Amino acid sequence: CRFKDTAAPVRSTKSGPCVASDNNLAELIAIVEGVQTACTLWRDQGMRGVGIRSDSMTAITLARDAVYGDKRNARDDYRTAQTRLRDLVDATGVRVALRWVRSHQADGSVKTYLNNAVDAAAGMARRSEG
Image (cartoon, rainbow, N blue to C red; front, top):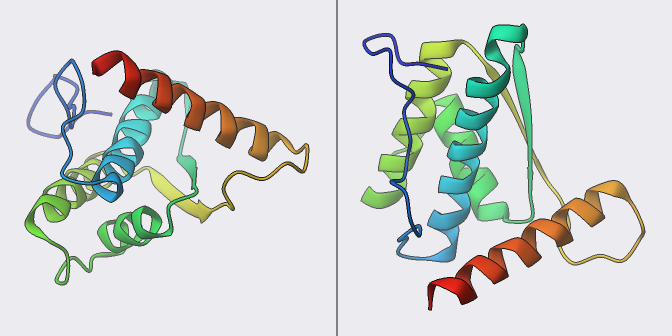
């Protein structure tokens, strides 16, 4: 996925820790990065869409608002991430499906396993930054 006016991939964050004002912004940035990464890795192989699952209803709502065009009620820092997501979708034509999943479940499903694994990785990253 590349923007129309540049050949370079676009990142929402620089290398190093993500400095977000709150957990909702961090979740939204993770969604943007996930879409960017999927596009970078698989767009040339015919990928037309990406599915995003998150246990943050706020982040899903913010991302959905970005994809479908309503950013009026968001804070400035949310709008910046939303604009990056909207620009990415516009530039690539990729479809983004957003779905909320219940967090911290123990039902043995793959989605629960993945959610818990991502939560554990995020916790390790936070501890290593401190």
